[in-house]
Image 1 (cartoon, rainbow, N blue to C red):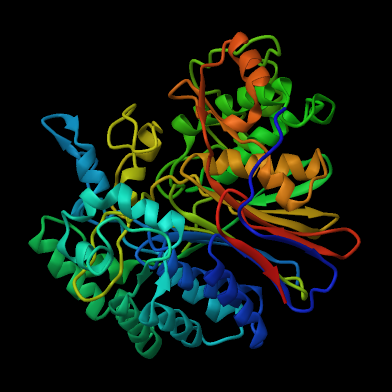
Image 2 (cartoon, rainbow, N blue to C red):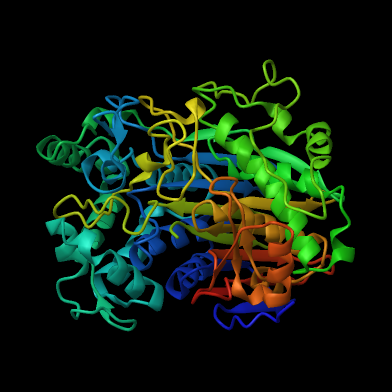
Length: 554
């Protein structure tokens, strides 16, 4: 295997932690989380500070115009999963993006129809009110100050501006916000000020989230939508509520895995794949070997075939509990051959698929961040506006970029979305429904004690990145930086291709091709963050070595 050559993203290893640890994709967001700890906040406050600041300095990936999933492990041992996923407007119908019987992908990716009701802000407010210590207004003001004063855009931000410049220029407010005042070709280090976003943050700080969901912002958004062919209304905003769900749980080689349930497919399939791989001796294969990549890929294919058929919003579709059963994994594992790639023609049928379901509740792109404190509070949070700069819609004067997560629905069975994912009836568009997600904020426990918080960004590769981080932590006992630096690979069933990072090395790639894999080589895949508490009581953390993020502690 070729040695990893990643040199970005900071990491740490220390026994000197006195308050807590933070890992994000952007140094200013990491600093915001640490400052929340400094002024008496806990890991939940730190995570909220990170989220609000990322909405400023990493706004092409996430923000209050999008959604999030939060997996929390509280100091009293409780686990809470908060679903802040966007919802479809009440007027949404399954043929929303069909024109003359065919899917028009532009409608689900850019513009008014692409926008789902944002859920991040309501979720952060609920987490703050229930589990935090600091007034959220204080955290909003800190982020607003950065937006007002401006910040130097990093390489990722500059790259996204260049890549989406043509689309952004179709929307005057987005053009004014992100392109006017910058050089013709934005470069890392150029300073960007977002005074309109600072103003919005301060309105929320002064008036509460009601300003966003039931007040001026919702009303102004509804008026803009009506004038531009959208269907999102003020009533849609007023009806939005985060949902507390039961986490999905599994075990792997004596560790407990806790992750996010549907409408995330991530937690279900991380655990499903781990169940499959528990039957193989990965350690003896060696990290990055052809055998390791092959067997993990075969397991990914089986799980992603299940994703396409079975996964959706549990309020609207029946998602079988059997997907995460050891019995089902044992049956699927028998299909894996070590000498060649197998064709997966269809999803499997989990046990009790017609009777046992995930409960309904009774009442490159994206970002992930992890926080923990010395009292025992842990957070894994993944937030997103979907593709770069979301729908490109910015309601005039607000600075808030709205998501395009309506593209995460299946516009038509078998028709791929932006990320090439296909779905079926379980993920069809319906009013007030939450689209299927790959976000996988995950916690790992040993003997009831949290030892790892991890998650990733990057569309469907979120699942494979999170999986590989867990495998390298448990099977190969690697610390966070090495676990995240290892060569990544991804297979999502359809299209039938194995995407791999070039650092795997040509001998491994040649052997994978010999076994029948259709290999596509890429320079890098995704971005993950992780924090760890070792058995000796010392801490370690890392931002993704492929990026410019930071991990640090107080």
